[in-house]
Each structure stands twice: as structure tokens, then as C-alpha cells.
Amino acid sequence: MRILLIASAFNSLTQRVHAELRDRGHTVAHAVVRDGDSVRAAVERHDPKLVIAPLLRTAIPEDVWSRRTCLVVHPGPPGDRGPSSLDWAIQEGQAAWGVTVLQADAVFDAGDVWASASFPMPAAAKSDIYRGEVSDAALEAVMLAVGRFASGAYRPRPQQDLKVRTRPVLDQSRRRIDWKEDSTATVLRTLRAADSRPGVLDELLGEEWYLHGGHPEDQLRGRPGALLATRAQAICRATVDGAVWLPQLRPRRAPGGPATFRLPATLALDDRLPPLPEVPAPLELPAGRRTYSEIRYQEEDGVGFIRFAFPGGAMSTVQCRRLLAAYRFACTRPTRVLVLGGRRDFFSNGIHLGVIEAAGNPAEESMANVKAMDDVVEAVLTTTDRLVVAALPGNAAAGGVMLALAADEVWCRSGTVLNPHYRLMGLPGSEYWTYTLPRRVGAETAESLTRDTQPLSAAAGRRLGLVDHILPSTPQAFAAQVAARAAELAGDPGTHQRVTDKKKARARDEAIKPLAAYRTEELAAMRRVCHDPAAPYHALRRAFLRKEPPPGARRVRPAVAPSGGHDGQTTTL
Image 1 (cartoon, rainbow, N blue to C red):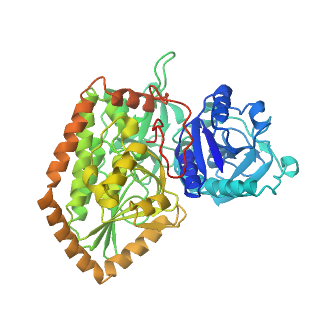
Image 2: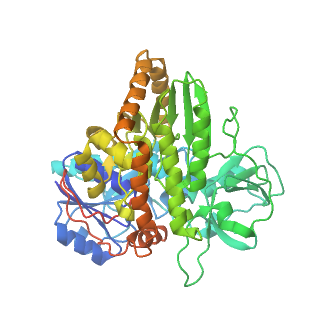
Image 3: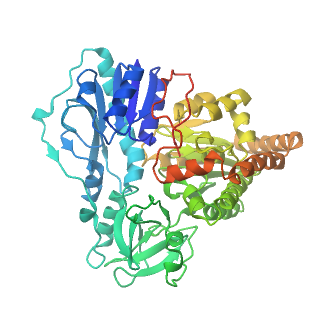
């Protein structure tokens, strides 16, 4: 069936629906739309059998929904209405939530229900839940709705018999934190409900900032609202009964000024930040500790786990160096298997565009970041005394995919979306991709993946050879499944022979072409782009960070058959 996806952004959910529909043999096109006219243009151009809106902030015109079936994905259970559905659910502490696929109508969220799915609400940030539980439920409901539509026999259920609850926009007046009154639990719910959009507007050091992200701290204490310490570029702020770590800040946009973007908290505050103690980030934590650390090491059953979780999946120069130090420590431990990856959400999206944009010399910071990523990948590639597993609980893109491919095995949660390319940011790529990608999928497929820039489902990645194992898991259960499988691998008598064979293979490859040669060639190409002020990379980076349309981007993508290409104009990081 020919299906058109219309969305306000080609975000993680839209990418997943796109990839999974293609896996099922549908011909899928997508259009980034900003108003009714662009919706009309997209529909007229593609003449789809069915229109699906996974993420839409504009109304579908009546002349479109009255003539074609248009299905809208709403991140709330049947009967829930309003533009801040998931935000309200998190801030109110709902134990369970859902997703509804309904037919577009004259009233927002009031159309007939085609399908729905529910899920238990974890104690996590909105963006994490959206890419995890919401994405799983949405995919289930969308596929059920598509099947029902294709049957021609199903009649969607009107909402007139449902208990309807319509809630307003959760604006900043309802998101305010009262540092003198609010408990740590209340502060965390408020922060999590606003992550990563729009953030919580707050006053800090005499200025207004949006706070992004929040993690509990169980030891540091101080006057409510006071800044207590820094760690790994995050700041710790006291509550009435504890403290929270704030990893990212965004300055409030000045009237008429350019859009702002998130940065590590201490980098955003810069010289405004008063002298505070720098509390070391613990690599190993005792059971029961509640504190903030982007990188943690754990050891169990002959397996070392290097767990990392960077906001938005972006890895700055500093973060890469910390991860490399943790990896080197892990390599000193007597384990047979190393597992690289977090418990939930993103694996990695590569270099940190925000830190690069904020640097005094973005070209130099780009190169420093790329080299730091290269160092991590090289360390993984040259580990020949044990097996390394990249465990992807969520999405990966660009250099993050190449980091995963450096491992001996790649394990993905079933809901993972991969974007194994750099082209949409105008970069030729690094992280030894010219070695690892062809090694995995062959030269021809590697060229196709980097040229066509299609988002891939985990299943598609498995078919191509990018992924070794898919774990059909909920976001919450993924880490336990990885641990069990890794313990089996560590205890497998055949693992010793695999390590021996791996060492020999690395020596053979090095003799044919040293890793240093791949690195030199890739960095030379990256340097030419990064140091060229006219290169598209710089304008694309700025547009991405400020949520602006990419320069010269076409808003409507040509129809894509299951094995076809496309024009590569959509930001995917």
C-alpha cells in the first residue's frame, strides 16, 4: 500500500514508523509539513492510499481529511485530548499510559479510534519514555490500524462513549519549581515532564534559564535552591529534602534574537558560575546509591559492563575522553566479555554539535571531537584479549553506529532505529567507518547506506549484517536480557577460541592496511570540510540546533519503495 507520513519533524517515532512500514512491504513517503498548504501539497504530490501523522503540530485541512483517511498518533489513551498529554501524565505521576491512533477530524484528538495500546509508566524522562514505551505502543497501534484499514471491513470506534478528558497546554506557569517548598521527587517529576522540550524555565544566578534533565542526589545537602557542586559539567542544586543534578541548560531566547540550544550546564554558565567543589564522578557505585554519573562500570559473571548515557546521545570531546578512560579501566579487569552501552534510550549519535557550535573555533572543536571519538573506536577495535559487545537499548546514528560496529557483536533492542550515515550533516564521516562498515556489509552495501541515508529498523540492520542479535524486549527489561546473554557468552567454552581467532584476524587486517591509514584518510576528508567556512556542514549544524529547516531542504520527500533510495534531506541526529 502507498502510505504518506506527514510530520512536523522527521523525529525518532516518524523514523521508526517509516522503517517498520517499509519492512512490511509498503511503499512509504514522508513529508515534513509546517502548515495546511504543505499538507495539501504533500498529499497532492504522492496521492497516497493512507495518510499517517506520527508527530503533527498543525491541523490537517478539512479538504484533505474529508476525502482521505488520515490517521493521527496521539500520545495518550483513548479519550485523552490535548497537546501536552505525555507531559501531564509524567508530571502527575501516572502509573500507566497509552497511545491512540485516531482519524483526523474537525476537532483535535476527537476523531474515531482505529487502535490503541497501553504501557506501564517508568520513572524516566519524557524524551526517554517517548523513544521507548511510547514508540513501542505507537508502533503496535499504528500497525494494527494499518491492518484494519487494509482489510476494508473495520469500522473505527467513535469517541462518544468514551470518558473524555481534555487538558490545556502545560505551559511554564504550571512547570515552575519552588525550590523552597518542592521535594526532590516533585522537582524530578517536573524536570522529567519537560525533557527535552520545552525545559523548565527557572531563575539561576540572576538570569532565566531552561533546565533540561534531572537526576537525584542522595548525599549532598544545602540551603534549598543553592548550588552545591559540579560534576562532569552538571550542576547540583539543593531541594528541601535533598538535591538534584542538572546536566543541561539553555538560555532564554532574547526578543528577536536567534533560537538557543542546550549545552552542558557548566559550559552554558561559563564565567557566571561561582566557585563550587568539583565532585568526582564515581565509575563504580554501591547498590542503592542515587546520584548522577554519565558513565558507570559494573562487573558480574565474568562480564564487564561499561554503561553510558549522554543527553541526546551526543558525545563531546570531554565525554569521549571520559568514556575512553572508563574503557581502558575495564580492559584491566579479568573479564572475558565487555558490554558497551546504556540501560535505556540512545546508544550514541556521535559528535556533540551543540558544544561545537558554542566553541570559539567550531572548526577546531569539530576536529577535536572527531579525534576523541576515533580514540574510543580505536580502543574497541584493538581489544584482542576478550570479546566486546555493543548493546543498543535505543537509537544510534552517524559516529554512534560506527562505534557500535567496532565491537565483535552488535545487540539491539527490537525498537532500535539506526542511521548509519553522515551525509545529512554534510560530513564525509570518521570513526573508522571506511574499515568497519564494509567489513560488516560489503563495499557495495556500505556505499548504498551512506548515500541513501535511510533510517533502518533493527530487523533491517540484522538482514544487512549491521546487527548480530535482536532482543525483543521492553525498554525496562533490556539491560537484564543483555546481562543474561552476556553471561552465557562469557561462560561459553567456544569464546576462548573466538578471542584467539579475533586476534589473528586483527593482525591480518593490520598487515593489509593499518588502522592508522584509515584514520589518516578519514581525518583529512573531515578537515577539509570542517575548515571550509562555505561547507554545508556549518549551516546544517546551525539549522539543526536551532530547529530550523536545513538550508535548501525540500519539505516533501519523493515516494520510497521498500528497496529504493531518497533525496537525503532530512535531519536524523
